[in-house]
Length: 191
Image 1 (cartoon, rainbow, N blue to C red):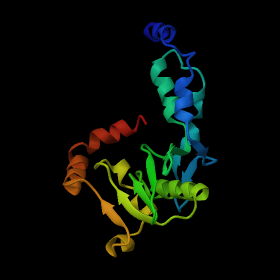
Image 2: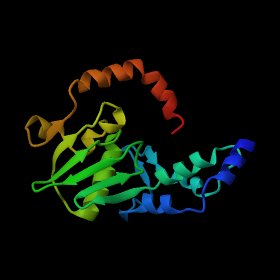
Image 3: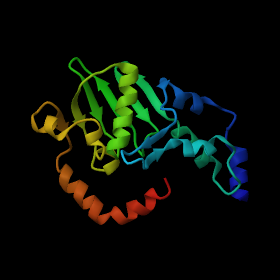
Image 4: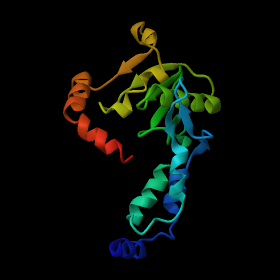
């Protein structure tokens, strides 16, 4: 705890520029920040992270506490004109790129429910644009598991939605979950 106190005294916590940076482009939040499944089960509850707005306890690294508070900010953000992200509804962020014929979704989160909530938040603020493509940046489940929250199998099969993934995507997704699944499951318990 002495190390945490010493670190706390040495870091520039009076500098609020990181708070300003993490809030830049904010448009709207989901309120409450709770996503439910059809059966009423809570899938994601970002409101549970509200405790991070207080001071770091003596037992926690103050820099990690501050970083956790920054990444817990939830809502729709404009990154640059035509590119938007929904943050804080899952372990990862979902990105919407507006084009002439619709919207491209990059990394549709981990679950159908959180991806659908993100798409609804995006559309309620940016308009009803058709999803024309889904891009998976890599094979971690929090970047592809929510596909059915933004698209249907029928649309993908019919070619109405392009699905773009790295070469070897399925092989890597399967092998990662077989080999690293138990460790990732334990890690997820801390998120």
